[in-house]
Amino acid sequence: MTIDQITSKQIEAYNNRDLEGNMDLFSDDIKFIQLSNGNILLEGKQAVQEMYKHLLDNSPDLFAEVVKRIDFEDKVVLHEYIHGRHGNKEKMEQVIILEIQNNKISKIYKL
Image (cartoon, rainbow, N blue to C red; front, side, top):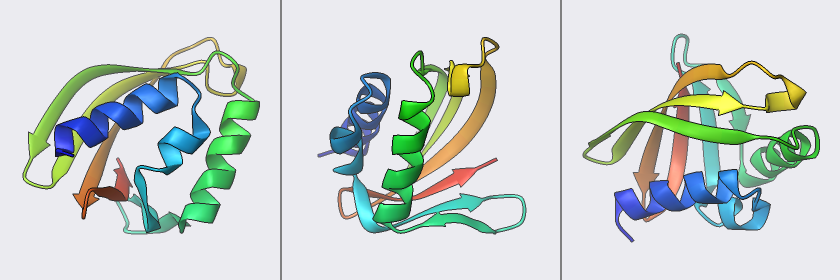
């Protein structure tokens, strides 16, 4: 799969509330990292799956709207609006960077 296909499938799985499909795209040692200070927010597939399950269980209207996307080497920068997170009616703006290694998302950097 190409980086474009992996990223597109991840967004599609997220928006379709497909936990299993989403998790299939992550490496076993996936890390969520706060870019500003390098802190690891989540580490390992199990921790990420628990976070997404909790998010989906508490966000029935969850949806990611991609505003802009930049592909660069093994990374994809996504500027998104997240709708319905934890029942919130206001959209949340975020920028994340997905790093792809061996056809899996290995790191997600949160700005």
